[in-house]
Length: 146
Image (cartoon, rainbow, N blue to C red; front, side, top):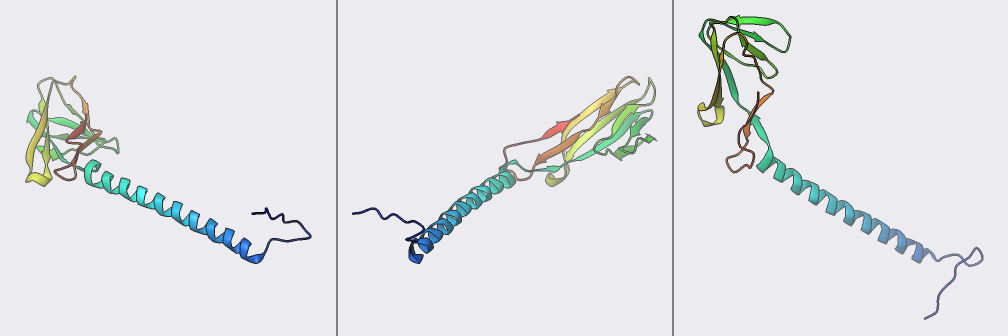
């Protein structure tokens, strides 16, 4: 089989140029397909096994009162139970005060997950996040950032 040499005097035939374009389009389409299938599989795995949803977090004053600072940096004094916002900070208002942070799972009919007790005015807690796995077969479990 002889090698064809193309130059300015002898241009490449149209059929050879179209064949190369067709191969380029087909290979680009195949690589795009493989990328989309891989990314779709990874996204589905992340959603089913790794994704999380927020939990209900309440603050309850057991004795005395609690000072709750929200994300707007205004402190509110609470004597009963109140929802605790993400990014908020809580502290007992004086030495004799006592409070409790209670975490509940809203997707299991409000089942108790954990609690933290704060005693005295030196105790301070901030809530970064409180999450649970989206589905029961997930791999993350409960995650609390205090």
